[in-house]
Picture 1 (cartoon, rainbow, N blue to C red):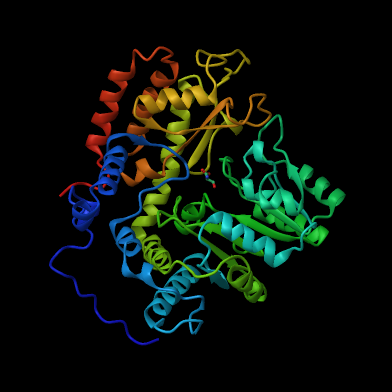
Picture 2: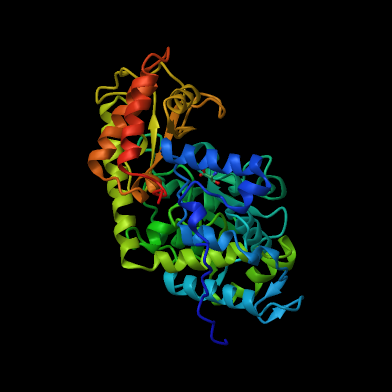
Length: 445
Ligand code: DSN
């Protein structure tokens, strides 16, 4: 690869817009959209962000995203493009791939998937033909839409079997997964979820997949940043393929990536392009490269460890507020809380039975706390209603909050959730404003 010229900064700091109130050219040429951006920046700064799949990308990531690389078509892969003028985007993609290979210790990485869902589509395309069987965690138990849900390509074009979590422990029941694998003989087994807070035994899944001759896909979309930060075990030694998103705990741009064993590299690459995607988003790929470099720094390890410590502290404090932690707690960045909380004797608590997940989400939002409703395993409520909430600590940890702030947040959530008629909104909002004022997001200059 030819050496890359030292960056030339222009007099106007290119990342200033992400810190301050001036969106420069956009403010002048399109004040309506500039207004939306400024309002959203203000919303993110002035409220608490606890949605488990969100995280604020760094100004450097945002600078790469909002760059001239968006102008470039580059169908193909570095050195094998269908367009001229690709030297710079080739350099960006090679950097992204090399950094991801080093970060995760994978044989091969494809950084082109536009999203996590697109990454999963490409894996299905690479490893299966329509009609073949897939075994994955059931959606209402924490699984993902692309793991076999009806209405999604995965549940429409493939025969999918969902494994439940144990009704007693709400943990993955590996004996049950093995029994289902023996019964159905799937071609692909998936682990990794969107609303499962505990560690996954990748070695156990590997053994089950080997026994029935299935490929093993680990969907690490949620916890990839915790793997990169070295605070939870890596699935890479066990999986045939690992998919991830770059915008959740990894704190990069919105996008996906696929890690795989060397022998699957060419099938995965062909499944991404030309089978499921056309031109790659080169600005997003450059931003992924920035994020992979950020995640390789020692401070990212500290960040990842604090995310988990904060999630534990928040979960424990929410239990004090009468919300029952599904599976008894968390090992990761997220927790699922059952609003029909029971104390140790099985008695419903103050929050319990009085509010649905949908209502609790709405009550929190009106008080400036952003989180989302969640099914709990064996939930009798409809998916649009639910009996639970999901919280995540990636954003508040990025704001440098620690355990004492998690206890303050839990109290605020408890007050908001119990506040049926809205009388507590002004007081909770004021305390939310004080808290985020102490730990500002994109500190203004
Ligand atoms: N929508 C994402 C989440 O919130 O977990 C998963 O795709």
